[in-house]
Image (tube, rainbow, N blue to C red; front, side, top):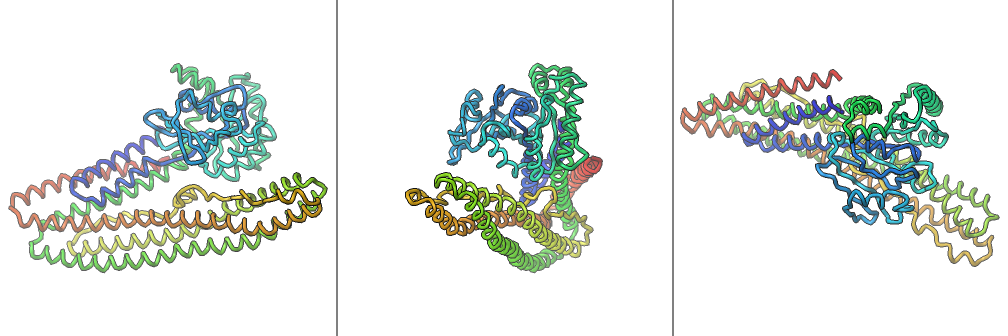
Length: 592
């Protein structure tokens, strides 16, 4: 499972750790700090794999079969009512997170009391989410599995909870069953899912229930229905028996595991994770490591060269280098102010788009509300209020739902341009530092540039944090006083109240969306700038330390200088060996 990805990742982590030991041994704190950042990003690489489908398709059993243990409760009635996230942990731990921000650690036996409809009907316990840490090899590489309530059950809140989770998904596993095959409600749900999720894997579960001929017939029916509904002709459905797979893993029965066909699907999923997510993360970490390795090699060569330089000449070179660094740092400070202004311009784009949204949304929604009001004038005031509240809520949610998705894409495009220019400017500063060193010490230094601009496969790569939260409709109406007046007047008063409060409501939600977007942009750029400045500081510190060490050695005995020269040669050999290993990793990445 995920073998190729894990092998490459393990080799790279090992290389990072070895370079970190070398840098720490030589006192290069900035390089060590950089390597720590790269390792953490590599280790903590997260990928949300959500399991979706109609109720009673076997989602919980499927997840249990993937992780190899019966941790999620299963039943013959619609069961899961709360989103449950399962991630890797060295020990099993189940945390219940409540809407009021509180949390509670529970045992596996207590889990049904929080995530099932029977134990927590209509979420009366106000559970926000359940998070499970579990020592499954499948989860060890940053993959989190999310179990969602089944759509189309008799419990409306379950369907709503699943829909609300879709924007957080990286890829989806959509479970069907052989009998009955795909239903119209599943097709309708799929059309919504594809708006949020770029990659959907289709799994036809419960293949052990039918003969091979019946199974093929059921799968072909589902395939044609999905392709017709989504307007595609490339749908692949993976047959599987989660029940057999779980039993096989629990009894270590390889023959039964093969019969379940789970290994075949795991191989497909492994390749996807490597290509779609893993390769980007691995390449970013590899390039960053190669850059720092080159820096460490440069400082060793510089130190070796400096040892051979007469002391007085060496001290003069150090003085010249410090003068050049003073100018370079002034350039870096100027760039900081320039890019602060660039980020503000991204926020200005957001502000203009919000104003356009308000100018368009309020009149359009008012027209819809007035039409709804006219169509329901014969209703009682209580029914009328309920209908208008629902229309208002759905209208606001619909406006913001579609707008936020488009706006995030638009802002990421602007942000990508800024981050690319800042990355290029950072590389220019590093190039100036290296060039100064080459000129002073007559060295040829290898260049390894890293492209830190936003990556195309994930709109949240730099836009950190959860998507904006909004739709605060609580307290939008206060109609109780209007129930005692004649119907015609009360209807008019309801509509008047709506027209008065709608702009306030839109404005309030726009304010919340603006703050969330602005906060994410600024935090993202601060982290981005911090990473790039670490690279500049690491380059400067390495050069400065190399010269300082050489100056110090020149003041010591010839024997000490000879020992230092031998130590440098040993470390250079270690560097060259590590460079070869990183080149092999790069070849492995290019071959998949």
